[in-house]
Structure formats: C-alpha cells, structure tokens
Amino acid sequence: MKNWITIIFFFTLISGIFSQTKRVGIGTTNPTKLLHIEGDVNSTDNLLYSRVNRVGNSDIRAIEAHSISNPGYGIGGHFTGGYRGVYALNDAGDYNGGGNYGLYAQAIGTTATGTRTALFAEATGGLINLAAKFGSGDVEVSNGVRIGSTSQNGRLYINNNNKAFGSTSSAIRVINNHNGSEATYGMYTTVETSSSADSYGIRAQGNVTGTGDSYGVRALAYANGTGGVAYGLHTQVTDAQGWSLYSLGKNYMSGDLRIGTTTDPYAGEYKVIVDGKILSEEVRIQNSSAWPDYVFQENYNLMPLDQLAQSIEDNGHLPNIPPAKVVESEGIQVGDMQIRMMEKIEELTLYILQLEKRIAEIEKR
Image 1 (cartoon, one colour):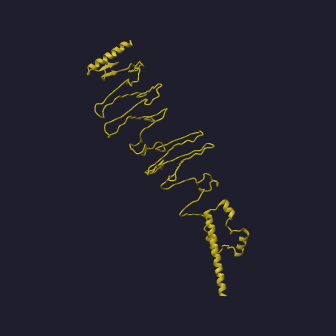
Image 2: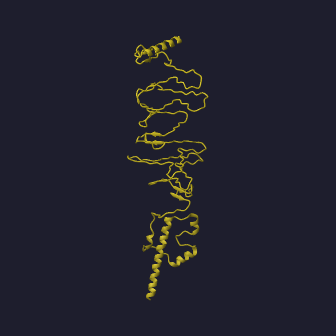
Image 3: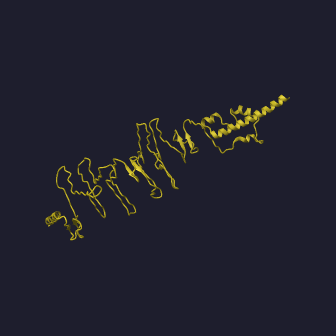
C-alpha cells in the first residue's frame, strides 16, 4: 500500500512540475500552493519525511530550499508550530571533530552597509518571554555581544535604556552562590597591557536623570560559612605603576577602612585603621569636646608652681598628660592630645604672666 502511495505522490508531483499553473494537493482538493499537503485529523504521521541513506563522507542535504527574488527579499523557509517552530537535532555519533551544529544560521552580503542578522528570535504574549534559552552546554561568542544597543564599543556592550525589570533595574546582575572549599567569583576580570594607553579591569559609570539612585557597580557579599571571607569587591595589581582602585569623585563608606591590615584590635571603635605611616599636606581635626579656653576663666584652678614642680618630680610627666609607657602601648588620640597640649600652653601663658607681674613689682620696688 505504501509503495502505491509513493508512486501516486511522485506522479502528481511530476505532473505539477510540467504544468506550472497547476497546483498539486495531497489530502486536499483545494490546494492553495503549488504543492499543498494536508494531514488527516485522525492520523499522527508526519506529513513530509526526507532521509539520506548514502554512506560516505558527503554533506548531502535532506532538504534544500532557495528563495531569492531580489537582494533583500525571499524567505528560505517558514515554519509555524504550536510547540516548536523549528526542531533541529545534530546526531554526530562518534564523530569527534568540530563544526557540528544543531542549528546553523548565516547572513551574508556583498556590501558593508546595512545590518545582517543571522538569527532573529522574538517572544511575546507570555508572563515570561524568552527570545532565547540555552540548556546544557556553554555559549561561545566569537565577536561582540550588544544588549539594548548596536554600538560597537567593546566585546560586551549593554545599554539598559532606562528599562526597569522589577523593583530594581540592573544592566548586569550576577548571583554566585557557592558552598565549596575553593574560591569562587561572581565576576573575574584580568587586564594585561603592553601599550602606553591606560587599561581598566572594570570601568563603571552611573548617570542619574530620575529620582532613583544609580550605581556604576554594586556588589553584595554574604559570609555565612565558618572559614571563608566574603569580598564585595577584590582588586589586585602586580606592578608598581598600576592602581588597584582608582576613583574620581566622592567616596562613601558606611563601615570602617583598614589600610595595611585586616584586623581591628579596637572592636569597631575607629572608622580608619592604618598599619603604617600617613603623609598628608593638611589634617583637620574637628572635635566636639570643649576647647581649653576655660583656662582663662576667673574660676579656673591653676596649679601653683610649687605643686606643679612636686607633681613632675613624683610622676615624671605633666599633669593630665599620659606617661610614655601608656603612649607606647596605647598610642594617642590626636584630637584629644591637641586639646591637652593647648591646655598646657594656656596654663604656661598664665604662669608667664604671673612671673611678668612679679618681676614688674620687684623692679618697681
């Protein structure tokens, strides 16, 4: 029975070829195309089956279609499916060479103008619309990736175009959850340059035109383990000319800043901890404590000179000034010490004025 059906199919096909104005219908008496095949509503058979049985190293096409009426016009194939529009399977067997593609798309032209799109995908009408979804296997891109733009700046160029996805809009969002013992990175960039131009591992810019905040880079780190350390941002340079972090504009830190050390022996008492020397052209200390102008008040109890001499003899340092051993072990607070030193300077001024007064009285006598 199948052989008769095959013979009838090819007979009708050949008849349609020799009569270009005649339409051939299979399963229908009213064909709308040159070859029109309609399936039986009670049948689950495939409508068209093509198979190459040749054994050999030949790329024989099971189906080949060409449609080029004029440059820029013509559709090689048009498929519509309620489940899948096109299903492509590459069964390479034990072949271990390259060039195996489940779906191969290519767009070419003879001029450098216009846009060539090898593969166009669009999804609309759903709660979640995915124009493309990749299952198992990696994704390799030989050239650039443009998202939201056709700009040629960089291998990966993303322009969010003020599009909000949810309550927080992110041009790039990477979530890296890991419970292993090795180090893991949400983003890892390496920059090597041998030219005279600057090179950046990450260069971020945030532009604000609305009322919401804008972040060039926002990194969150959660350390829920027992031995690992979580880094919101970790940068490193290997030469003296490089900058691990180079920032233009204002910088804000809600926590503390540690330079030259990762430990905090003061349990969060200080915002900046530096293990090393600090070089600065100017330092401004703004202390809320009372500046020692109280020394010049009439009710200030200025220690007599004989008591001051006795205190120095007994303790080996000025009153209200920490001894050398305390400074060596605990250091000093610059703002507090400046107040103490100013107090002593003002007391010294009063002592000088007292001596000047006594000298003037002696000279008078």
